Amino acid sequence: MFPPSFSLLFTSLFVFFVLMSGSFCLGTHANTTRTPRQLSLNYYAKSCPQLEQLVGSVTSQQFKQSPVSAPATIRLLFHDCFVGGCDASILIASKGGSKELAEKDAEDNRDLKVEGFETVRKAKEVVEKKCPGVVSCADILVIAARDYVHLAGGPYYPVKKGRWDGKISTASRVASNIPRANSTVDQLIKLFNSKGLTTRDLVALSGAHTIGFAHCKNFVARLYSYRGKGQPDPDMDPKLLHALRMYCPNFGGNSDIVAPFDATTPFLFDHAYYGNLQQKMGLLASDQALAFDPRTKPIVLEFAKDNRNFFQAFVAAMDKLSLIKVVRGARHGEKRRDCSMHI
Image 1 (cartoon, rainbow, N blue to C red):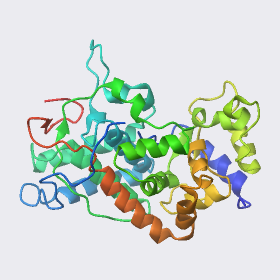
Image 2 (tube, one colour):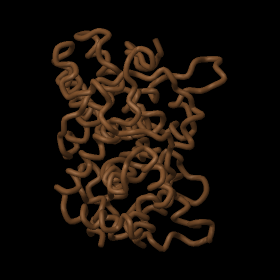
Image 3 (cartoon, rainbow, N blue to C red):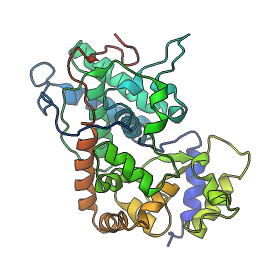
Image 4 (cartoon, rainbow, N blue to C red):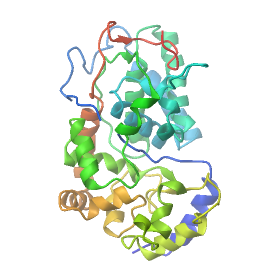
């Protein structure tokens, strides 16, 4: 059941977060998540020994100034890794006059929050002053995402480093690699498996929705005509349905309005997301489906009961995610000084 202050919570969240969003959509290239050669925890021990402290100085400040930087950067990493691998190709800006847009300008990436990009840009500037031309944008993004998980109350975990930045960034690769807000569990499992990720990884990574927000367009169909049947989704709690309808009309309305994925602890990285799914309080259809499918339901129940199990599974899944199709060496990669521009 919802806490008594549920309606008040939603009212205050919508008032203060009208311009935020943090819905992550993950994304279909075959790959391996085995640790690539030369990736290591101590990759920059000699060339940039202060790297993690330098990035941490930026993430801690950004988190204080704009907490939405946390879900924005975590989502940015998901979108980067699921489209061609963890190579910072999501950060490249489209060239004026070019026929092919860069990844970040693909339709599915247009609502990625600027705070994620700004985090990496600022961290890169700080790192370049101390270690010019040494650290990749791809490594900085992985480190920053880890920092934000921890700053929001989640686990701190070591990250392997040594990635190079990718030389390819095209919008046309995005759509087939990004799951939808209404993806079925079958579709999600198939997509995650294509990335070398298991069903357990899928459920654990979905737990990133313990923080962040989604625009009305991502769930409005659940409120009025789910699957085109003219009725709301029966798997949504009636109180949640009523609260969301107050701010997300069937037609028109403010396109900037957002709702929290986790209405109970929207700013805390914890396992409440899974308890919400058990109570039919999942915001996206793709989230709520995890609580009913026999392949994912037992994992949802496990994480709802045990925060430590969730954290352990999340760390393991994030490690595998960060190793998807890693670029190594100058033949296939580059070390950008400006993360938005190819060398």
